Length: 194
Length: 156
Image 1 (cartoon, rainbow over the protein chains, first blue to last red):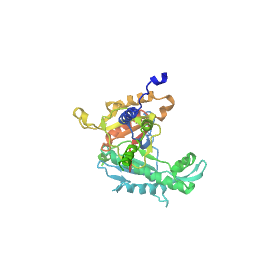
Image 2 (cartoon, each protein chain N blue to C red):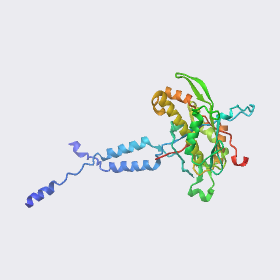
Image 3 (cartoon, rainbow over the protein chains, first blue to last red):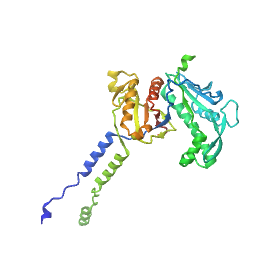
Image 4 (cartoon, rainbow over the protein chains, first blue to last red):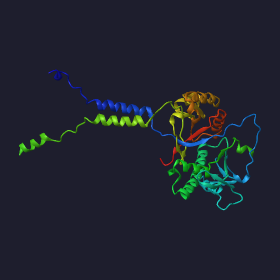
């Protein structure tokens, strides 16, 4: 018979070959999923445009400074541990007791939700040229964490779910009600000024 | 008695069939090919990303461009020293080269996606902010405003 003459191809080495390919792929590829803190930089001011300082009320700005020795200040207060910053930011933005010194609120109409007193607070982050990147990102992270906490609280209160579990429309409402206003001001040397 | 024993030996344990082994390995291979991204450039700087707990995932990897900032890796230290350097694509560059880099990266994207292009800043945690600020200012000048500070998710 003709079929008897063609010998069967031995498939025993198939496993070895595919192992080789597997190892090749392991070598040339990276596994790290890319994560990070997304930010939007403010556009460069137009050279021709007049420098117009937007008058922001003093009470609406929380200045967070990191000096060249990696010491963190909120306002004029020294922060020994970055985790303390969370509470300061939360107090500043929510201002539950309507303190005169903390951020002001303005009633705003939010589409699909109604009016809500939106905080007008802005967090201004300033750093020195010799601040370490590690501490800078730690502070950035603390600011985001504080705002996420407020958003979660808001979402829990009004929708009964955490912010991340909400739908697209509801997330938009939460984002409008609690904006993430972190301004990375023009760089200046904090240490030289003193 | 001996007869019984021999009989038992003959039967023995049946060999486990390895015929499906290639299929299994191929499946692992497929998993890796799908879940993994290719290493595009050789790292020429050491980057140990700082930790952060509130990280978000980069949504579309094909829209990201990478800037690495850190000290040169060991093999380049003889030549370039240990000062902080910026790596764009495959070579050390200065802040002034970022403009060309951003322009080239924009050109490589389709028109629709240009607005969504994200610059991922992979900065070593020991870097001083001065150079990072310079890079950020340059990015603002090129109006590449969407950036991401790459970080290591905490607790992992």
